[in-house]
Image: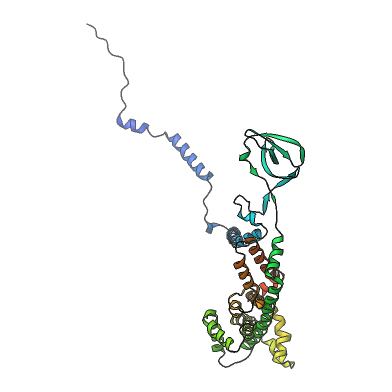
Length: 393
């Protein structure tokens, strides 16, 4: 009997051979390694801030500082922007919840003796400001203010349309606030208080700073330390005894309590001017003394021209302080309404017209205009005056 042998079947590979076949061939491995290296070279290298060159570092730091300064400046100027915009709005514009930020009012047009409100009507070619003549549920008739003779039929619900606004600046708010507040009287009172006090503090602070910086005085260190210690003393600590003193001599109800203290210098101003005097070489004093100049002549002819920016800065500091001072004028001049400065006058105006915000903001804007204009005119001297680097170039 013959037997047939089964066909040859492939035998299973050995275990070690099966594991070996799972790894790529040597040529494929080298190709993958080269591809990985090429990919790593193509990637953008990571660089830290310390690895940058000096010019790039300066640019990055300057950009960050500029950005932060701009953000702080915008945040600081936002209240002033609100004040300026509110000052030129009407009461209706302020109370309207749908009113835009700018002083704008709903636009109107007069048609056949009737005042019609303009609405923003959408069309295929854009939005047009039209006045509704005949409202309807599905169709409404509008007229174009530029072509009122040709009515326009619009399909849609007119109740969904928004009113059209136009720029409507209320400049008369400033004239109303000017007349209601009696600004000429307030500006006169504030000008006298600020002007006389500014002249007094500039003269007294210059003389004290000149003496403390150029002459040998016994206990000079104690005097300077005591003078600087008054900076940390709050005004409210001395207001009661000071008021009692002025009341005893009969000066309450006059400008003298606001003017007399400035004839005896101020610690801030003395310290600022003294630092400027110390930057001037003493050889100039000695040369002037050899020529026969007295100390006062040396001060007026040699020192003052050198520290002129600092003196102007001191004067501006006091002017802004006197212009904005509210506490002391309120105490000493409460019985004399005709002598009140602008700070107290604006407060009284706010108490009377607190519901008319447009007039309050217009009055505040007028009170801010003069100091702001003065600062922009004298800002060059002001910035030089607060710079304590050498005064002689």
